[in-house]
Length: 155
Image (tube, rainbow, N blue to C red; front, top):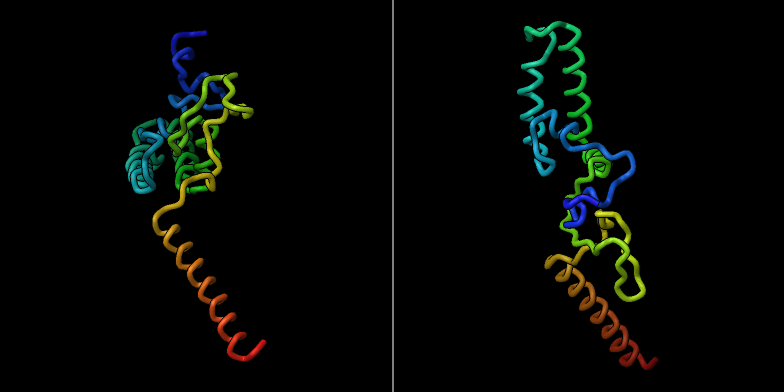
């Protein structure tokens, strides 16, 4: 085991069909995996002007290949669903996850080697908690109203 792997480096948890970041679409566009949609669009436009077969001084075959790579990278990184799947292949997580060391058990549960959480597995926001409180108060108010109506009508 290398020193990086012993320190819990992400390569310790290899993903099937993983793509190294140095050969990824992010590297091709000169972006970090945390780049936003606007940054992706801006980088794509700048590079497409540079490598478009009609505007570059490169040989046509090289320009076409490079331009096709840029188009593929932009098509994947500009689509949220495709980008999420691509991020899985690259090994990048948008969630801050703390992983247990491999083969370590806490209680009866054993952690998986995945760095990704279910998108639904997150704490509720303040707005969501407030909406749940209002929903609960509305339900309790309706029950109280039913009891009052039942008592006044003699049921």
